[in-house]
Image 1 (cartoon, rainbow, N blue to C red):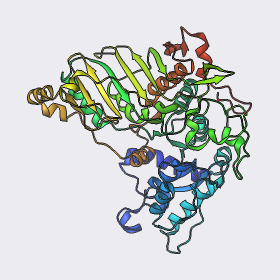
Image 2 (cartoon, rainbow, N blue to C red):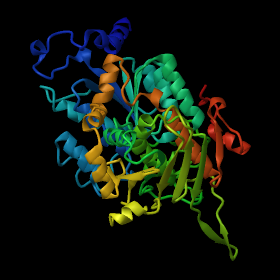
Image 3 (cartoon, helix red, strand yellow):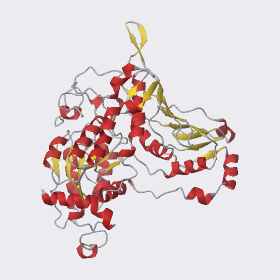
Length: 508
C-alpha cells in the first residue's frame, strides 16, 4: 500500500516540478515513445455500453495509460442501440485490428465481458507472448473502488443519473476522474461533485469540454467590434435522435439475463425494468438523463461559457412541445413531468459581468431553430440544420453547430471588417488545442488543470439542469438565486433541484 501511494504521488506531482515524468531514460527502456509500467496511469473504465466501448481505444492506444479494470451492471447482452448498422462492432473490430471480430453475430455488443475482452485482446497483440489476462471485471463500481487498489483514475461512461455518485465515490478514494457529459443531471448533485474536487484535490477532466478555437475566434471578432455589442447567442441541434416516449411504459418485459437492473438504477427509486429506460434512450427521461441539451450542448457551448465568462443564469424559461391523446372520446394534452419533450427552445439570461453586458443564450432542439435573419437573406443563404449564431446590435456571426467555419453576415460586413481589423492582435488570442485524451493524461500526470477541469463546469451544469426543471414544469420561467441555490418565484421548482434517492445511495 505504501509503494502504491508513493507511485500516486509521483504521478500527480513529480512532473509539475521536474518538467517531465521520467525515471529511466526511454532509450534504455524501449525506444522513442516507450513508457515504463511504473509511469503509466492505471485506469478503470466504468460503463461498457456502446459509447464506453467505442471510446475505449483512445485510452488503449495511449502509451501513458494502462486500462486495468472494467465495470458495468450488464454482463453481455444483445439489446444495445447504435446509430448505424454494425457501426459499434466494426469500430471495435477496427480498433483491435481484427476485422472478423464477432462478425455475423447479428447483435450490438455491450457489457463488462465485452469490455474485458476488448482490453485483453488489444494488449495481447502488444505483448511478446501474445497473451494478456490483466483486466479485472466488476458489476458494482463500489466493489471496484474498494478492491482495485492499484488504479490511479476512473473513466465514467455510465448513464447520466450515475455520473455524480460514481465520480464522487472515486474522488473520495483519491482517484482522478475523466467523465463524459453531463457532470450530473441535478443542480445539487453537480455542486457536490465540484465541492468534492475542491476537497480531495484530485485531477479531473470533462470529456465534452472543448478548447474552443472557433469560439475563441468569434470572441476575438466581437471584442474587435465586428458585430457591435453581443446581445444573443443561439445554438440549435437535430437532437433528439433517439425515441422520446410521451408515456411511462406499462408492460413488464423480463430483465435481460446478466443485467443487474438494481445496480443500473443506482440512487433512483425502484421501478419495473423496461428497455425504454436503458442504453441510448435513457437520456430522454428526467430521472436518468439530461435531455438533448446535456447530450450535445456541452460540446458546443462549453467554450462559450468560458470565452464569454458566463456565470450561472439569473433566469431560465422554455417552450416545450407537447403530445395529445384521445381518452374516452376526448382529445387532451398529456401531462408529462417525467420525459423530455420531442422539441423545445430554452432561454438562459445572464447578468452583465465586467465589460460584458447582459446576454441571452437560446438552445433549440428537435428541429427548432431561430428565424432566418435579414443578413442571411441578403446573402441568399438559409440557416443550416444545426448551427450557432451570435447576434450583436450591429451584425451577426453564423457558424456550424460546433462553431465550425464561423462567418460574419452579410458578406459585405465581413469584407469591411477583414479590411480594417488588426490581424496580429486577433491571432494572438488563439491558444494550442490538445486532443481529448492527451488533455486529461497531461492533467493527471502533472497536476495542472486541463481546459476541461470540473471546477469550470459549475455555470454550464447549473444552466442545463435548470433548463430541465423549466421544461419539467411545462416551460415555467424560473428566477435563480445561485448564491442560495433556490428558485425564488416558483417554489415547487425547488424539489427538482435534487433527486429523491433510495436509502443507502444518498449524496452528502
